Image (cartoon, rainbow, N blue to C red; front, top):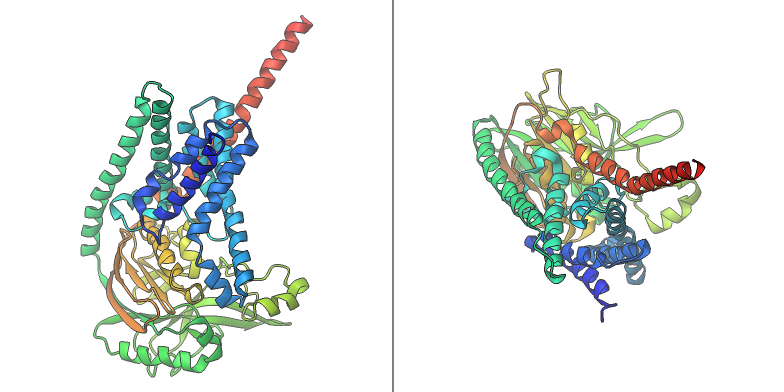
Length: 519
């Protein structure tokens, strides 16, 4: 039974993690989900064992959290159920490796530095969340998306800071439990550290929620209409004209709203190829009287071929496209195909709608009347470093864009993923203290305030128009906007130093021994 206990503890950690995450929404479990794994690692004697236990925890985590991937692979890639299940399991193995790396690194740091696991584990966790490459990036902190009291610290150090604080509470609790099990004195320093971490997180949250409410109240407002025409991925390609007409009809109605300052369409809502500066009069609305931001495919021809970008266009009153943002972070297999020249025939068979697009280059915001709005497309809104780049200063004064908009498709993921995507995006609003307006093809579209709260949202797979007053917040960067992911770099540097600490000490000891022998 004792041999099975570490595996059972790792499994329990995986279950607690995905139950605490968005979808199951038992957010409080995320503050203890690492405890069983950390207890299991205390008795491990080899790095391979630490890696295996932790990787298993990661596999279980993703097995429970990414079940919606089966639907996506069937819908988008036209995989059979067995093939979709295989893809799902492979993703669980690959993405679960981040937890394998975490457990191995924490175990090795404890061995090398002789510091308690409760100290090195939070450092290892932040380092891995920061540096480990993932197809679908997410953070432990994302589990707290619906608890605004606990998420406000993101404006200090980003989502990494909250993940680090949660890992610290997990590690402190593991030290306390281990001391009890081993009949050692209670490690009061760890108990105090965990309690103070929770108190600081909640106290700072309460303060910032009040402060941001006052800022939003004093800011000028822009009335925005989000058009969700419920045109799914298949309809968008198979019935192009009908889909665009649905957007156009809803836009004509929205144009009648008094005081409207912006109409927002989702990613590739205008599913046509559009050159820069195109005149869209009569195509996106019978008459464009209000500024619009629409998703479309921008096309330019060079000497040999057409070049395509996934873009957000600003359509000025009158119908002319006056500015655009091109997506810069493209999704592998969805928007660009690695080794396409070599594997082109296979891609066309497995992914009939996929083709390689161009990577955008400009990060400039889009003009909407007197305001500047930062735009991003699809899953770019879950990438903290990219959004920080987009929210860079407008000029030498340090002023930043007044708000953020996200244009998203999401229709091929099924009913589960859009809610997870929305939750992950809320942290961008907190990190930069700007409202985020999201327009999706089939849901969930939303208005998110500068504290990361959902002010208004649409239903899934329902045609509807959301209308909201968006504060155009002025001013410079948050602390996170200034320092970025410095916490991640520090954790990575500390982890690297810890790995070489004992090796250096051993080398110094050997050198001294050699000197004594020579003498």
